[in-house]
Length: 385
Image (cartoon, rainbow, N blue to C red; front, side, top):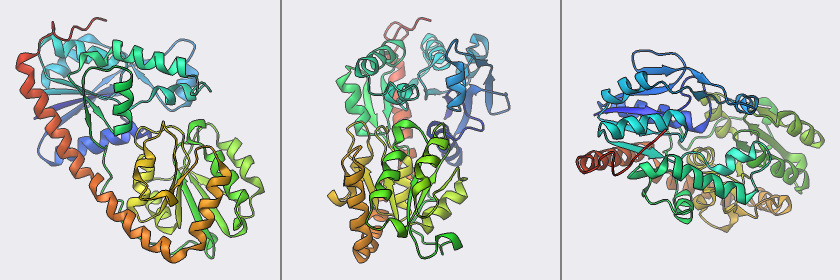
């Protein structure tokens, strides 16, 4: 199969969407398929590169989030789409819209993915809880691009249900982005500054909706605060704010962006994982942690898919409640044998989200769309720019 992945940013980015695209591409290639990319940046043999589109008034916010938009180019996108047996659009922006238009015009199979929650978009400007704005964005995204797909890839049941609530008519195919085989049960000797401490870790972008502030406050409220080493693995716009917030901790917070290899090591040195986020379409960082053998304590936010991974109530706390989170952290510290037993239970549960299974399911999705393409025309899914 010749598969074209269309997204805004593919090179050098550390966001979850781009990482998922790299994993999908690498695994499809390993199975003998030919995969090329259409995204912003330079062109090369396996990629059609597009210029960067600068968004009026909001460009500084987009750049601050480490994101860029691709500048649509009809001639270049036509070349890319006509090369492919199937086009998979991973982001709902103008580059993807152009790819859909051209694919429908030439009756080339085309699928879409829902990787970006409107809540995440608006949280970057402090409006993630403005539900009228969030609902409008779901509506607009469906009218703008998602109504033109027969199948939408949804990384979690939570987001598929959300699309149902917002009257998306396409089939919603729930397929995890998949846990890399690099994340397996393992324990490492703690580095010198962590020795003798109970290491609590959370990984992810340091942004408002991820709620690292709740975790910092929970550690400050813990009965075992003096024994806890807090690790926040990530970078983002709230770095300075969280550094200041954590300044009262007995043990200085370890806070930095980690490479893939360093993240694997830090998870192996840690004792407990906390996922405090209010908004997550799948929560890959949480999945990687429990696959590595860490018991998670997860927010029960209705806008996050992460609580689906909890094996019992001991791993779920009330969203936004630092006191409740502190009580859960304390329970796991005080029940060491049970925590060690549950580490293996969680690592075992991760196997059903293995990347290899996800790639199998994505291939089935592509094959289903290709089989249906013969009876789909531009008139069935009209696209206008």
